[in-house]
Length: 272
Length: 342
Image (cartoon, rainbow over all chains, first blue to last red; front, side):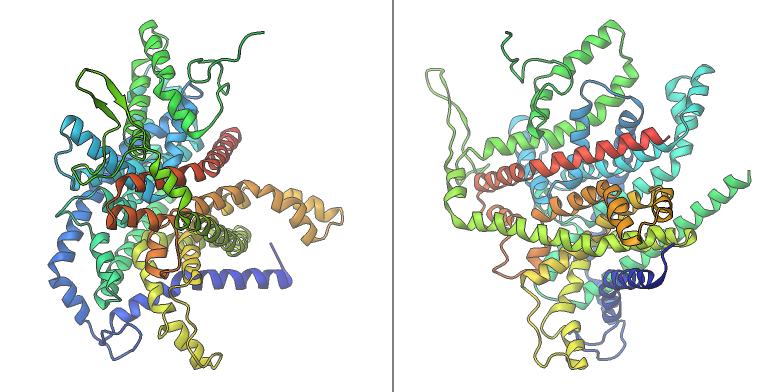
């Protein structure tokens, strides 16, 4: 424990840091209820921007497209990420391990413009060579998102797998269970929280991505961030504030619920 | 004396080949590991299930992450034309069945000669470096305070660090426009306080870009720092205190060196993506804030010059190879440490 003036300094930095993180979000929420179109002048309480948002077909259809992509992406990323996590956490050293870890960690830090551009170039080259993908849109965006979000999921699942007690798996193997059965009956339930966390992470990464989607998308397929970006470029708009408020509410509720469920499961496990 | 082995052909022991990023991909391309694996399968020393579990994510990443870079490399050597696709092929068949390979270095010469690209590169590195240091200065005390907080406080405090990350990045950057612009919240607040009479021009400057970078990447700095700080052995500090070491000195000689893996991981997680950042300089920066991500975007979307955009991407990647390899090493070391602890 830290005491005296040091604890005061630490507390101040922490308070400043949290204020820095949250003041912008609160300012967005407050001004979404502003009567005036100007984001900086308060002209009375109003919910009219929410009404306008619900009538904005462009934003609604983009949100629907983004949700579809995000769900497909999250599911695929959990499957691929679990496989890759297993390889890294359980298979020990093998010849191509360094190449494998490079391919896993590089997408975590690769600037999005580079990932986006290179994937588009690949899709165009493939289209010329084998005629697939025929058009760019939902499929190409999903593939692109899968590629970078599976890397994040892999890290989450790998760390859970390496913390897990391997002796349960070994015991099952000794008793004659086949590796696939051990995985589904023992490993999956143990790492379930990591699977859920990975799914949610991949879901948000996909829902949030502007740059990569802009590169690999085609005409007619605009995701929510693409629509938000084009409206933000034209200047601040209270409808975007309303949208932000809705997203913040959904995320907060989801996280509180997830935290509550995990807390209760932890308690049950400790009691059992 | 044996001649030194040709790097790309000789399988050799692990680590015999220079460990560069492209080198790994190149080796894989040569099929060294693939051949070994197939041989193992045939001889029964490698199980099919294992091979499948490894192959699926590996092939996916190779196809959609490794291979695209080779395509970009190829296109960076071609010429822009008005066609579909808008670049010339490298390999062409002449009438008499001869294949010609035409490499066009014009795009790279353009990058080297035009000061626009140089200043964009240097400016990206500068802004990313300042942003990383600022993240470290703010993030280190935060991570330290959370690690030293009462155990029941740690999880909620960490959740509060992660929570903004789950809301839209684009919208959080957008929030700063309303705060930093001339008649924005911060200027109004400072005028109301009487600190300034005229609004400070904060938007569309390097300052606003830096605020955006620190704001967006702060969680990426705090989390790895917290991970190393919370794993630290407290008894070392107690021993130092028992031997009469003052807390400040104990921090400098024990805590700081032991937290270096977290410092490196956090700094790389902030620095590398910030170099190529597009959204932040585009929304918060001004016309003078040149950053390489924005240049690439403009070359691609506005100028429709795919070969030059590809050359910019290749040059940026070369710039980032060293930090990326360093980051990967740090990741592997921490993974190894975590395994040893179990």
